[in-house]
Image (cartoon, rainbow, N blue to C red; front, top):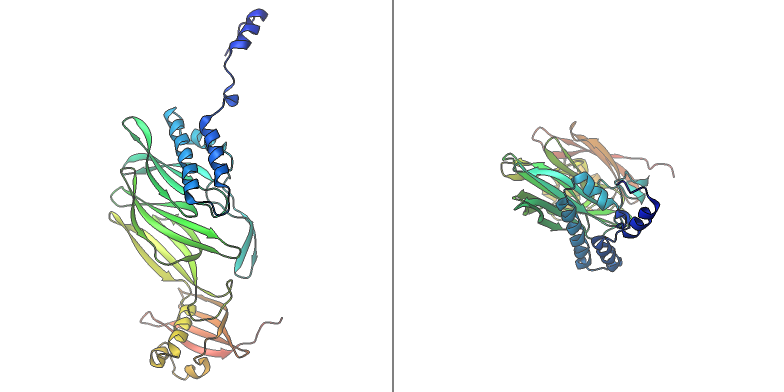
Length: 350
């Protein structure tokens, strides 16, 4: 803007010019601050966060209505209090666990992402604040010439969406929620179909996931996670059974398959689940029935393990009555894993 050069006119203009945009009060930003303060932390009801994210939705729709693109909308979101950028995190690995002073974040705390579903351009909003607070995924679409929020999925904890293109030009969205404890993470995953701007629930993956790590690659979504062995004794950061769930397009829906990533642990766990109750079924997991005498029926402690599922071999160290044994397992020609050897194993030096 070019102002008149005369001093008198300049003085008059100074009195009547509008305030700079940066100094203008923004009612939506002020409402966001109020809602954020109302969450208060601690045992805040989820409704307080839903109201907070409602304001974020309103702000996004307003900016889109002003002709802003996704980059400009994200600049507006980054100016809100509590915004946090994506980060690789900062942590220290101890044994099988990682203790973070700053948790990794795949996405900024508040962000909109351009997507397409059924050839329709949409925006996906993802909102998370702090640690273990309820998050949200919103969908924005143009309806009757104006941007509107057409879909929403509220989460109990921090949520990250992963996109899965479907064969009919549709789009599936896999949302992974994560609760972070002092020495572990618990995750749950849900699958949605994004149709006409609405998130339609397809399925919830059964069972709790420990330390979930998800990625979208090669037209699939893979989630690696662990679960505690049902029968072996192990500390919380000790030996677990590892799994990989793969979600893939299947026409207009999604197929789900789960494989065990360390079956040499799973087969030993199954053995001790059967040994005391069904000895014959337990012996069927052994290549030689004589191995049952060394393994016994009392549940041992599980220590280290390792192996290669592609090579079909792996091992697990167990301990019972102060004695350690290395239990080796292999995959047979029928695809089943069986215990092939049980050998004394020296404990590592203290």
